Image (spheres, rainbow, N blue to C red):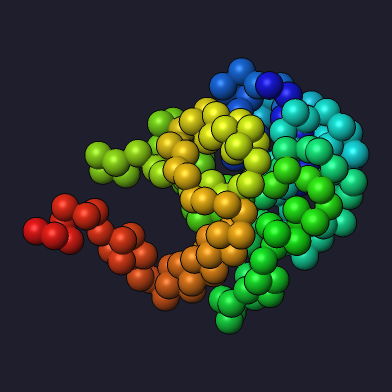
Length: 203
């Protein structure tokens, strides 16, 4: 698959590197050409502009700061866009934009919310990504079945297990969950303890 990556930061490198290792063609595009080149060289991908990445990809990972996501995405009508952004107000850990994925879908892109719940270090682990005896579940929210299925493949290729999170309107819940969880992590709380397995809760 051809994957365009918008952004050259940590998530772009971590997920892009996973997909290169899985045999996909990846082109990293950024607002600053030098940053795209450095990221692409590190993971074995090609480099270009944001427009290059958007036109190149059968799927496009949006991995830029949430505040500039819409501007960086530009005209993505018909494109499958993987939105991993979190519009979190630093220090307060609330949402600056309460429905980022829905807003991005207003560009007529086929948006799927995914990969926004885990810190980038999780995606730097070897594949498959496992905690204890449990594979990492990655919720996906989207309205387009074909787009959700394709992003599910990318989740597997990154070492996770795709989980149906429902339609795109539920992406706002994923975004709020990320904001809440980040605030807990900063306080040193093990957020996983709040989501115990069903058998443990019933036992």
